[in-house]
View 1 (cartoon, rainbow, N blue to C red):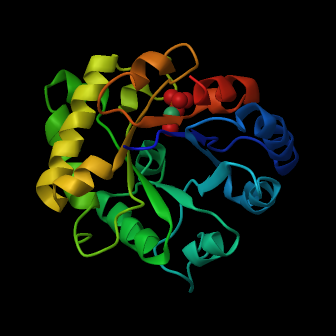
View 2 (cartoon, rainbow, N blue to C red):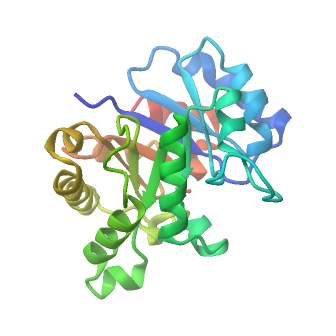
Length: 248
Ligand code: PGA
């Protein structure tokens, strides 16, 4: 049985003080939930927020990291520093990183390998643009992203790997994929994992949906057979709204 996972991606929002206020409001609201709850604040907030959720059921993820553990890489985030402060998850290959910071599947692949090696659980994002969907290429794009981003990981410990299917046209636009469309692609991703890594890994890996998830549409998405949770952007910025998503 795959444990449901609801992760909030704050993107470049909230200062340290705002982040601490948020988590102190959220802790009592989600303390009895069955789902796994993850918050991904900005990198500057990580340390304080991680300390604030000690001994609660909330886990913390980073939004990005570099694939090298240390060295002359000005401005980058070291995976080793993340594990040192108790970070468990890391979002990799988010479409905003791909679009604005030109991250390629190859870059994402190096980061996935590095994260798994150091014991961080990657939340690997894949998803197609509107044009790709309209021209019938969604499945091909997902196939390419999955195979290039997961190249060479067969021999690594994969129990922590999470995939997030985020159609780019649904991110921050208020347009959610229909639950059937989301489930169809997510089932396809599971099939690709089964072919590459075997049936039992595919059965256990959690695959999230992301793109304009809110408290009013989470329940129907979560009723679908292959959707194991959500990666929530805008609606994760309000503690009450986010807690309602967690407790769908
Ligand atoms: P959204 O963002 O919920 O605001 O659409 C999702 C994401 O980018 O992870």
